[in-house]
Image 1 (cartoon, rainbow, N blue to C red):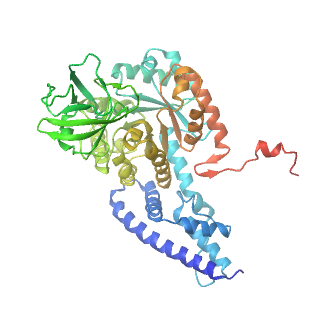
Image 2: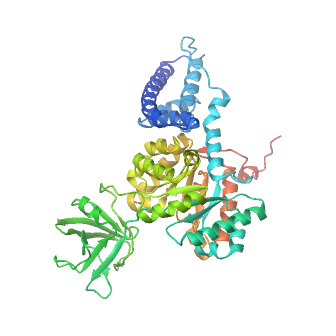
Image 3: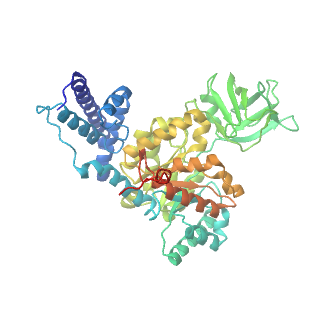
Length: 503
């Protein structure tokens, strides 16, 4: 066996890493354990705790040292954290010819346990994945789905695995017709389709607008007044006054904090706080010649600290219907474990304890605070209910910025895999194609990235059936090359065309 100081030091470093990770992970899991009522989630929560302990550290130099000796670089340990560490240490013991350290290789079943648990969870929540692809396809239903039975039949026939009903639109009468059309098509096609009903949540928006301008546009360095009272004229010489749909938020703002309007098309900053509101200075725009400002457009406060009820009165009424008809319930703007406890309590008011604990939840990640609290949110939710996480990249990009967004969507995928929680890749997938029938090159690349998730969501659009066909084909091709972070090395056509044959 090879002997070297470098290998001995590498073994010692790995043993110390394992010791520290195990200790920290056990402490975290012990804190979580009283909240976990679902037995199948215990091992998943334990693995998540160990994974977080690893990811608190910078191990990039260690990774490079391991690769040199043909060992795992620890770059794909999400679903098997301790098993991966143990396998590397066991190999290092053999290379060092060290018989004193007692580290065994994990069994095959143990090594693949996390992946199998994730597959089981995905099937329970999202249904069985089709034979030709790993990722399911979710489609947001338009109003037409409540009016046109054939349209729903065509969606399911084309491969829709999950139908999403957005409770921010339409009403219970239309939702019921959509559901009837889905159930009828299921029977005719002998194909299951899960129904997700997405509770709208407290969307923060411009409730009303008062201005002296005929065409209220804003430019860089203009000022707006955001009032905390009923809409009124500004006493500050400002021509555009906005009323927020949730005025209590205004009292929580501080000078220097950013305010984003209309999905980030307008970026402002709190310049001055007054008795009746805040003065906002415009810092950036997405259009050189100014942006028109309108009522009903969204407001985002990415760095402000405030708490609002997760469910409005309308949401609670919608939940009465949803609990009777939905296969999966989705919740928006979840920021903490307390939010999860709140919605679980609301569900228990409407269902028996047994049914309330069995209904799957989809939690949408669309705020920075929600992402920061993702591990605690997962434990609170998956500890009692089957759980899926949706990466709502539109709102998240507005809050975090597009550069940070690229990193956050990866982190969400990794953390969810470590917890055996399935993921929905959502927002603007093939958006251009759904509108025009022709995909942009960047949209195809985005779908390839989304293939790592257990489900990819399409929004509504005129060319939805064509979009589903393209999505189905891309997902089928990509699954042959990649699973999560792991490249799958099937024969490359480019390599085979070089004239060599494998005997």
